[in-house]
Every structure is written in C-alpha cells, then in structure tokens.
Image (cartoon, rainbow, N blue to C red; front, side, top):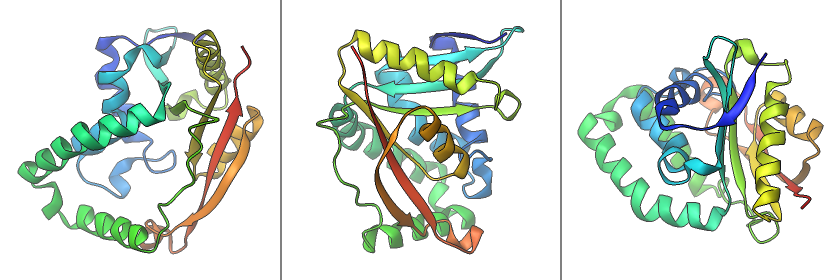
Length: 215
C-alpha cells in the first residue's frame, strides 16, 4: 500500500536522489551528466525550496519515499525566480565545483547549446490557459502500480482547491507520453530535440501536454 502525502523538509534528499536516478527519461542522470548535486539543483531546487506546499510524495509501507510530484501553481513566477536568482547561483556553484570542466558534462552542455542555437528549445507559452506545471518521477520498482496516477490525482485536487485553471508540462520518453495521455492530458505542442543525439544516435520528439483543472 502506497500513501500519498504532502512533501516535508526531510524528504528533500530522497527527492533529489530520485530526480538524479530518473533524469534520463526514467534512467539515471549519470548517463549524460556527471554532477548529481548540480543536476538535482536544476531539476528540483525551485520546487523543494521555494514552493514546497505544492509538492507531494508517495511513501510505501516501510515509510520509504518511492516517488514524487513537484508542482508550481504559476510558471511565470517559477521562471522569473529561476532565471533571476537560482540559475545565476547554480552557474557559479557549478564553476567552483569544476562541473564545466568534466568531459561528459561539456559534451552535454555543448549539445544543449547547439539545440538552443537551432531554436529547438523555443516552446509556445501556454501559461495563460495552463498556468501550473509539474515534475513527476518514480523509482523503478514503484512504476506500473498506479502510484503515478495517485500522485496526479492528489496534485490535480490541490490545484482545483487553489482555483488554478490548468496545468502543463513537457515529456520526451515513450512511457511519459503514454502516462500523460492516459491521465487525460492533451498534446499542445510537438517538437524535436537533438541534445541526446550523441548518446542515442537519433533526435527525440518532445511533447508539451496540458489539462484543464475542474473546480
């Protein structure tokens, strides 16, 4: 039996660990990046440190956190705070940690830079109709057991209580795409990303999904 409960401060490290272990489309982030601290900051820090009230975790019978859904009720606030405060500090932290000088990291960052130059990272702004966003991940052993659906139900109920009109997010993995479609999300945008080509030998489709929230 899995319990869905609000995120607590002492969940921070396990949430960061799960984010690291699932960062490569459900697989470990170590496949493309060599600094867990920096990648975990990038993926989770806004949510856990600035909007923890919008986050929820799944806990198994042994009391172990096996998954999470990290939420933000207003992506404009998220983006503003991330790029004005979090990202500059993250760049400085990465510099002093030597993150930029590791071969694997340089290869990935170069690939992302090329994607940016090619315009692949440009995505339409859906925040007016779908202001909220989310980041969801589960440990390998907790998948295909309804845990993700349970987390989603709790988060959507939370958004409904807050009178948030809709929520959107991006997905690239086949499993992620299938999950969001099953949960009633609609495809709002489809594009291509090439920054994992050096690992996968192909480009990937990226989908932005959206769902209205019933009050």
